[in-house]
Length: 464
Ligand code: UDX
Ligand code: ADP
Image (cartoon, rainbow, N blue to C red; front, side, top):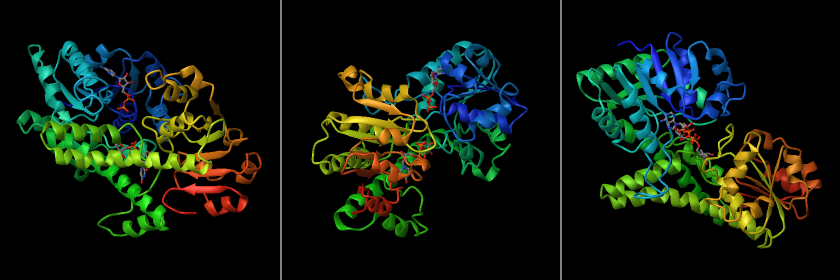
């Protein structure tokens, strides 16, 4: 089989950018990204894409309507596809067995059932969403139990390693592409087909093939180990604050050891994003199910340290402001979980905002890329907020940092957007209540300059 048609189920943060880059690099292949959501597909077909990702607009503009299509016609997309990526959401379960930890595979299962019901020809089905180990087996079971005569399936695991904010670069210059499949003649042939697609732009030596379960576990392991580095440096940031050491200096010294390396050692208010917490919880759950409680406890600690870090940061804010925030205006700069994305999933800013609201503060939020509706949803969703209307009255959302910080008692920086570094802090200081505080949760500001202006400054991992 030569792949001429690709369908991707799920037009989210993974499916959208990944398939746009495949379309860019494989002009002879027709790529259709199909989603159940009419609104999402309409946005992908409009000038304002549903996700903000540097470089994505250009790629979509180049390919859309030529060999890249966004569609709600899932049936047609599956029928004509030779290869189908499953890139649907895999949130943490919110009820039942494994609640709060296990990955909810209902969307993956739904996608597999759709393929089984619709397909009339052979398909290579590729799981791209991060899934628990052996999820490919569940997909295979569903497909095989509903197999029509003459239709065969090969299931591959091809986890995506892109990070938001750098997705296009990560896709174009991937460190590695991982493909897991069955060690049978048909399995190897399917792996080869997928390799052929990536070989349009990824050197063959960077495409790693392995068995399906290793591939699935490698994705969880990579995310767990990245998050572990952040929790490790964050744990040391607490030691630095207690002793007078500077965590940036420690990170630099440690990172110069080539065995350790310098990346992912940036202490912060805590990690966020849709993957780290979800994947580690999932790993912890798997370990418990496999009767490996010590391993489960080890990885759980990475999450616990992240919670501790967020808690430590908000406690510092409250204690510095005379232990009361009641009636005070606090400006939150940045709401996304990192810079260069509009995504707020598991953003530490949500934890910070909620804690400050619980203390009775009025919060004024500015983020360059997060929509107002998203902030409102994150803070007043009835599932997490008992009195949405009361809380909503204490939240204001602004279009710039100057208005957001006016008459505030404190600025709390939660996302490391570059534009926050170059703000005119003298002007900001002049318009704030005194004493005026800055709590830099990302260690990006010039603290000495802020102190000279008159601010009381606190940051992570350093006494000022
Ligand atoms: C992560 C993985 O990096 C990616 O390979 C995987 O496919 C999906 O999960 P993502 O969550 O998009 O990507 O962003 P990432 O850059 O990993 O950042 C995650 C969180 O860690 C952010 O909140 C970021 O601010 C924080 N972080 C990152 C730190 O606090 N310190 C660091 O040194 C690095
Ligand atoms: P991710 O960050 O993993 O890409 P998102 O939540 O951004 O996750 O996107 C997942 C997308 O998958 C959503 O737009 C959702 O509507 C879509 N989806 C869920 N189930 C299906 C399905 N069976 N077929 C097509 N799309 C689906």
